[in-house]
Figure 1 (cartoon, rainbow over the protein chains, first blue to last red):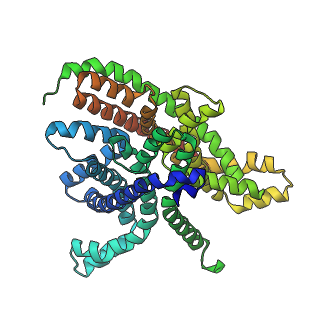
Figure 2 (cartoon, each protein chain N blue to C red; figure 1 turned 90 degrees about the horizontal axis):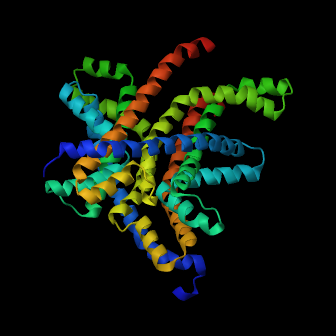
Length: 224
Length: 222
């Protein structure tokens, strides 16, 4: 069956296994990044100075240097300290930490944007800070977090391509191997770009849906 | 595992000079992105349907695909069609094109924030499109988005590290080359991170000062 597929598309087969790895790495990294974002974001607004300082240092480091620099640093330096993990584990952890740092700013921003009155009312009702955060603040902040989180998820997906530089067998790596084997550079890279676009498309539709909902909201009820 | 401070002193000048390539590449690519984004947003908001669809498609596609692959595409594929640049020029062009898609969205938000009365007034005064855009809309659209554009420049400083994958002699590439000779990865790569951090925090500080100076003027404009 496969020898009847017309020219550019016969290259899709070898790329698909890379695409699966990309989606898998991205999904797991997203979950890790979400966890890191909440921990670091809430730590960043803690009243305890050491906690806040640690969070700031963490966020500033991961936002102040690019993913590729962090990648090579982790890849070459950590083994010298005895910590050697496989490429995929390294990639997942790095993506989780890096985009968790960006996500933490989103968490921080949306939590701080919740009306001060909510905190006052919770205190008046004798709710502990933890309970307030869990039952009152975070649910309200979470709605605002979704659009920028989705954007960050798209960035994370694109970040998986950089993992190809440490031999993670994802889509970009599959593409480069295929270019070496087949010599059909333009077709392969075009297909790789299209595949990334297809994977990202559901997320980007989600972002555009969020954007239009925001626009509709700010146009006001009278236009409904 | 020892850290050699004298080695750090040795490679610092080499790395610092390589970092200048990153700064240069980022600044030139940023200028390209500022201009490219303007063309893209004008096409995106054009009344000509083909232009609008084409621009929207390009913007979506560039924003949803990894820059690394776009870079490889420009670097490996364009020479086959006779367009050959050196690695640095190719990298700058690719960076500029990629970020044009982002600046165009920023411009779009700025244009949307211009009060609709301005458009009505321009129509009432029978101004041609070029005057409307050039003298009324764009000056008001670009001012509020300058902070975001400044942020993009700072991100681009760091993004230039990817150019190491097409053998540009910028900071990361030079550092990896040095480290592969001396096997002193810790010192070299840590210095790379420190230099990028310095570029990023330094540029942020400069922008915040500029914003502080500009803000009083912004308040009196309204």
